[in-house]
Structure formats: C-alpha cells, structure tokens
Length: 231
Length: 116
View 1: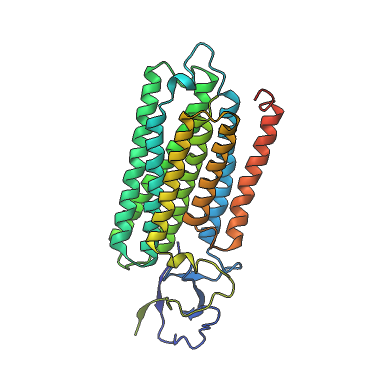
View 2 (view 1 turned 120 degrees about the vertical axis):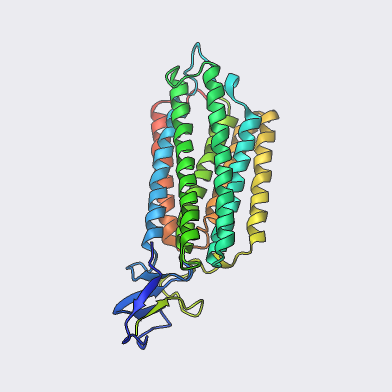
C-alpha cells in the first residue's frame, strides 16, 4: 500500500523537486509522483520505476496460471472416468451456467468502472461499483452452491469418481477465489468509507481489480473447456 | 509549524521511466468499457449458441478461438495490460505460457490427445 499523506517538516520547501522525473523531495525521502499506477498517491522510489505492489500482483497472477493450469489439466484427464456414476452429459445445466458466466463477466465491467471512478477520486462511485461487483460475485457463488447441491442430490459426491473429484476441486478452487475476492471488495468498501483522505485508494482498487478480472478469465477458460466442450 | 501534504502534482510531471504506463487507460471513458462488455456478452452468447448447433469438426476450434478472444480482451482492456508497462505483460504471460506448455506436455505424456 502506498502511503499518500506525508508529514512535512518546516524545512521542506520542495526546492529539489524534479518535475521531469516526477521525484518529489519530502521529509528527506524521495517520493515518485506516480499518477499512473496510483493516481494521486506518492510511491517510494523503486528500481524499476513501477509500483512494487502492482509488480507483485502480476507475478502472483502469473503463478496462479500454473495452479489453475494444473487443476484444469487434471480435470481434462479424468473427465471421462465416471463409470457407473453420473457424468457431464447427465449433470450439466448449460442455461444456468451460461447465466452465471454472464453475471461474472458483467462483474468485470463493474470492477473496471470502480477502478475508473477511483482514479478520478470519486469515492462515492467507487464504493457503489465495488458493492455491485461484490453482489454480482455473490450471485455467481450462489449459483455455484446451487449447482453443487443439485449434483450432490443426483448422486455426485466428491469421492464418487475421478471425474467428480477433479470437477469439484477445480470449480471449488475457483469458487473460493471468487469468495476471497468478495471479502476483499467488501473490506475495501469499508476502508474507503472510513478513510479520512478522499480518493487515495486508487492503487488498492486497481490491485483488487486485477485479482477480480483474473478470476473472471479463469472462468472464461473453465466455462469453455469444462462445460461447453463435451467429454 | 507542521503541515500535512498530499503528494500529487496531477498530470504535470513526467514518466520517463514508465513509458506508456497507465497514461492512456486512465482516461478511457466508461462508454469504452461498456462497449467492450457488450462485445464480450455477445461472444458468450455465440459460444452458448454454438453448443446447441452442430458444427461438426469446426465446433471445438471455434469455441477455443472464441475463448482466447474473450481471455485476451479482458486481460488487454479490462486489466489494462495493453496500455501498461511491458514488464507486467512479461510477468503474466511468462506464467501463462509456462502453464500452457507444461500442462500440454503433461497431457501428451498421458496420451490425452490420442483418442480425440
């Protein structure tokens, strides 16, 4: 998190500020005026000139590709292993899954609108779009819980077959990611509401937005490979 | 006297180290994102429509292409990777392509593609 409010000593007159590089000398420290990654927030100088938080988030998302790649590959290997128990053809409810996919896709829109509002320092709109995003995410998770419950009553438990284990693990991990995203969104709404400095959470909103969009793109892959392409 | 200062010089300062970082995406109007979302919704509707149609051998390649189109659109435009610093792209796509190649190799090892 970048600290945006700095206590300035009386001696600080910004005489050493460099408008060409965006480096501002405050309280004996160099602060990069990074209106790109975090509009209106000051960053400490980094060796790359980029926000370390943002770099870490992209690195994390890159590593998440490996996690979900493993889970998707495992499902693809085992999706036909359900002898004597229900398989994809008997279970899938494509209309329901399509609607929940659409809901998650639209949550990406509301998330990017929240990021846009945060960059314009509009806290009211930011919290509104973050709340809508969380509600759309909750709708998606609700649909997934309904789907899991239906499958369970149709005879598909976690250990029923290799297909069921790999399916519940894959979609369950994704559902947990969405749930964590909802918790982060609601926590962020609370933080912004209580913040005494208006419009200073643009980078945090952007980072959580990156996570949320990642959850969406993982579902784009799952929806096609798991639900639409038959085993 | 001690004062509190918010370090922000608006858009007057330079970004010599960051190149195109965030400059363009920061000013995309909301209508742009709404149009992208509508396009994504249409592609999703086409995907679902294809599920109920019989395209034969074209079915799977078409679905995979549409999936990649949606994926790249969200990453490039919603996640702003297209407008952001290239280092972010390298970090993300390194993980993505590593995952794709590792797991394709794993699936080939298990002869996943032999029966299809």
